[in-house]
Length: 320
Image (cartoon, rainbow, N blue to C red; front, side, top):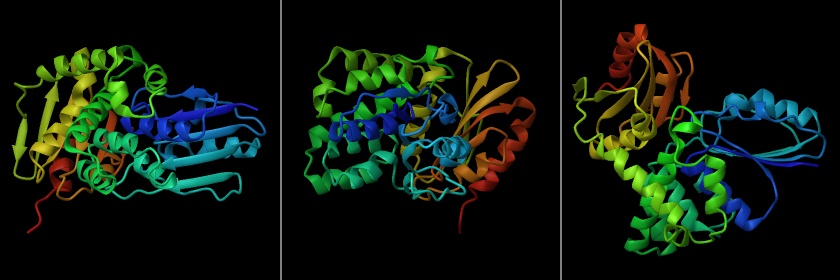
């Protein structure tokens, strides 16, 4: 019997797994990667009685892998908040899927564990740019303002580390970052470590590079930015997208990072005041997906840039 922990390499995936393993410690094989690497069931060959935990990865992108694992006799626990598509009905499969735009996997696991490790859930929600949901849980649990700000910064840094176009772009491999976080029941204790300071310093340096970026096209309902093909832009594009969304809550945003001369990687944020439509927009393009409030396209050909711009502004028309 093998135990697998399969999780998104961003803040939400790490914080969701952290809660589960604080509750139920387990020696497992960690399966993760960069934030956009979500077809993770394809990396395992499940056998009878294997125990598989899957967190913060789209069921729609892993359905056939889940089916193969179930057919092999494995047990699967699956929690997520992305578009799921058709689900599988099996006694071997425990599903906790909620695609509401105001939740994330860390909050789903927090509900499952009845607030037992709520500080990590708050950290994960902040990292997934669900500030209102994070604040609501912080209010409910009595977290003070200083600790909230610390968890917000930690969540942002954990999320920052998940971006990049390959693990070589990242400060830490997500599995390595999780193992560094894992000993700490309280996220504030991890904040005191040199590991966190290294991550924070890299984040601050990369974010500084974005300060002079201007949109290539801006309208009342949205703005499109294009970032250069550089390691810093590959790392910081996601948190930069979140910062734009928070600074202009009535506006949608698309941040494109050049992949050489012929392609772009795209991050889309729906307006925070109406968190819907990002996933539907991105699924119109090959390699696109995500959730209602935040989605992306892994490879957008430069030849489709004009079409994307047209679809983007149409998707987020201002309502009267």
